[in-house]
Amino acid sequence: MISNFIPGLIMIITSFLLPTIPQYFRHPAMLLSVGLSALSLFNGYGTFLEWDILGLNLILYQSDSLTLPFAIIFHIAAILVIIFSWHSKNLMEHMATLAYAGSAIGALHAGDFFSLFIWWEATALTSVFIVFAGNTNAAKDAAMRYLIIQVSSGVLLLIGACLMLYQTGNHNLAVLDLKTNFGIFIFIAFGIKAAFPLLNGWLQDSYPESSVTGTVALSAFTTKLAIYALARTFPGTDSLIWIGAIMTAFPVFFAVIENDLRRVLSFSLNNQLGFMVVGIGIGTELSLNGTVAHAFVHIIYKALLFMSMGAVLYRAGTTKASELGGLYKYMPFTTIFCIIGAMSISAFPLFSGFVAKSLIMSSLGGMGMVLIYFILFFASAGVLEHSGIKIPYFAFFAHERKNKVKEAPINMLIAMGIAAFLCIAIGVFPKYLYQILPYAVEYQPYTLDHVISQLQLLVFAIIAFLFLVKFKLYPSEIRSTVLNSDWFYRKMLPGIGKPLFKKIGLLTDSLYKNLGLSFKQVLSKSYKFSNLSYIKVTTPSFAGTILISILFIMLVIVLV
Amino acid sequence: MKKNDLKSMGKSFTKYILIIGALLILLDFTFHRHEYFSFAEIYGFPAFFGFVSFVFIVMLGKWLRKFLMRKEDYYDQ
Image (cartoon, rainbow over all chains, first blue to last red):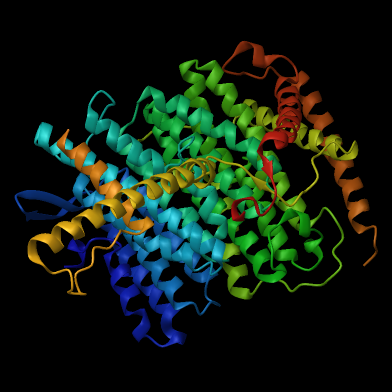
């Protein structure tokens, strides 16, 4: 019976029961639900649950060699997040986090686009509460923007799925291309969640506004679900190679000048997704293995880095580089864990990033793609800059700190410790990671050529950093906002739209007033109701005018 | 704890990194490093590439501040 239960669903059910569980037992119950869901990992491959509804056959639970590694790492991430948030009493956030992780796991096992759509929207609707739990005005505004973008992605997916069903009579997950219109809709839907260039604004906007623990949960699921979906439906799509390459290179420059270290990590997350997208674009067995391996290790070290910054936020009250520094004395364990995360993401040999990134680089090298290869090699120096050096340096070193802070709570240290252990264990024993990858490929990351080449790149990039600091060329930390692609809908569109709508509003107001008067006159003449006070023709408000205009435009579009 | 802790840590860190860097370059002369692209097999190429990329990223980022940096309350205005 349990073998037919959709993985993740038990977590969603538990999340709804959480309010009935006493505070003390909530975290154990959450862990238990993840454990029960994880039993599904032993079910093997196949289709386990289908549902015929409204003439559609929905595949609710299927599993294969691509879902398994993602399912394993999503369960691990859920466990890390629960341990990391053990001290917290925020019920809403716990419910949202558990349901969010459950939805993401459910999404992995969907076998058709309609089931995927349901889970796709479920991850959006649950995770928005995590952003909301940041509990500041900025967080609430960011949550609303986040919701709009995420739901739009879902709507595009639904349009794509409907078009596909209409045109081909099929709605099962399959490899698509960009020659069909439904393929393009689905591609953009995935692209929004995978934070493609110019579609990435929501990520850096919302993640850093979330709570100490919330950002850790957010960093794990949404974007990697999109990577999974892209790997399933668009492997070998050439344009992904360039999209991915741009994603690796661009965020690097933004991360250099960003002051909020959790936002720096969000840019860094975007850059890491780029490596995975390139792997999908190449589409060989080796490169797809590389994408999956990279997603797997990335979730762990990115969670570790977000946890260390969460601990800093929890104890020091801020993650702004301009106000931090010198924490190594007071938070030695957090410092060490953060450095392990930093070395993993920078792909130092013996750390997890190295054994995963090598797969993608080797497949690029093997295909002779020299330009992309060096863009990614260049971006690797960028990763070292923002995540390898900037994060630990500005938080824990940089300046002496005047006021004391305490080390992170024990539960946070345990969660960070587990993640740090995994980073090193996977780096030292990569064969266990390689065993669960979708394709059986023999690969040896630790060749002398590889190790020396990577070490030269990293060590000399560190020397460059020391050189820049020594000669005071390294940009100082300044309290500021760095413009990103969310500027288009946060500043530009309102900048054009507000005055425009105001003008339209004034115009229609006067129009309605005139019309209203004449309408009243007509009424009074024909029915002689002029002395009855309850007949009033009101003019619509500004908001009403906008609503009517939008409805009118939609009507026109539908009719056309 | 002493006040110049960070300074002395920075100094010894710099010393060790420079030694490791020098060793890595020397090591390059002892064997033929196979790469996917022949020009990357030049002695010390990854080291040079890493150093230049890093400086380029930081300097370009710094220059981009002119266009991308706004006040902290920019979106609240």
